[in-house]
Length: 51
Image (cartoon, rainbow, N blue to C red; front, side, top):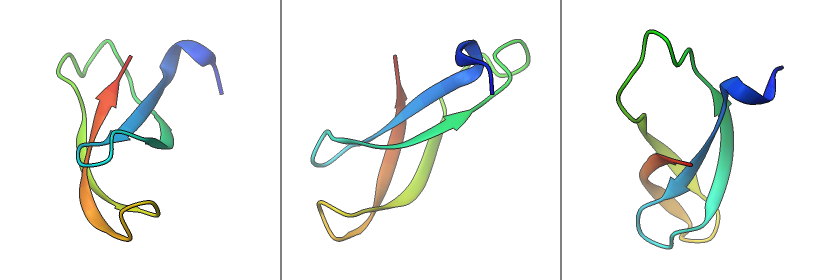
């Protein structure tokens, strides 16, 4: 997996980076938002893409 396609997903509640994913930056210009499980909050929260 190339590093330029990698993104970090950060929890909106505790602000910790929990997941790494990839996306096509040429087709998706907006920041990715997903509902994922946060092991620090111990519940499903919204995770947003960070730099």
